[in-house]
Length: 416
Image (cartoon, rainbow, N blue to C red):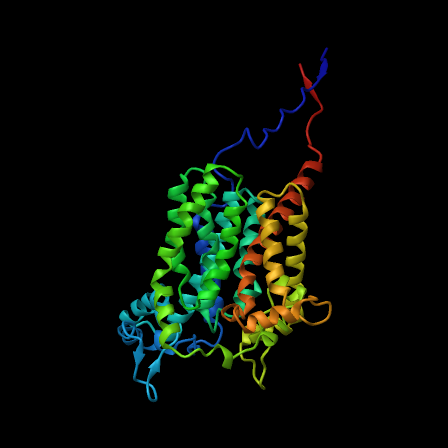
């Protein structure tokens, strides 16, 4: 006769503390290579054979001559000569790349597409590795979040026309990575973080500083104790040194150059497009809305006017906020603080429907002593990073919850 007994209960699932170790996730560089290849092919498909005007034409067309001009403030080649603006900011990493491309006789249009694809790939891989380091989301949701970050409207609007403006945001996750690694001492973590900052470039000081705001908030949100004090004490001077190659020439430009800020955009212009919804979805760049019979920034105009892009980016932002609203999201203090601070900076000067009550004062400040930060869309990078991490957590938690509710198929009784 065969008797049966009830099978023993399944073994308990180890807790997070019990499974401490390397963060799970798709660490294989094949993901990076595959993502880069797709982006590169897509960029090649857009007007192949034609180059774009990427801020400074000399960087892409004559990089060696451009490099030889970096050692002097005065440039006499154009018109009656003058002091060129932000020349030194291209010294790294954009100028060396195009110098090498010129050295191997790579066509300019192909070098531009390769450069743009590398920036997008850097943003993707950095966001993925940061999500792994912070243990946010699951393997699949981290891939989704990294893809969302690399293609966030704040980047896609400018990547084809002002690629240097996308560099700070692309390298933002990489600046955070060493600081989030508890294996390093505070000194080593701060110095490794500072070594990444030059890759943000120095074309626009405001863009670099705006993308470093979330890093400062990360340090301030660390638990009180010796490590936080040491991180701040080491990181602050390291940052000053790491950016000296562009802020010292910038000071010289301020002394001897012409202050052109009063003659270009105004605070009202730069804030009119920064409503709360546009700020959240990364579509607040006012230049993207310029259309004079032809879009000033074709990709930016798509971000501003395409229904599909608007719906998808708004959905991603909304899901990101929902993820950050969960109490179980890792690094919730830092992520929520980043969203609140960057959102306040972005919408404080908006005077449209349901705008800030003090927008007039803020606009006066942006036209005055805060004029270097008048293009406030540059602060959208930190908001984008926080939202995609929230997206990763929400999708990962939803998948885990669905898996937990799924019934386990198998025998209820085991034969003796």
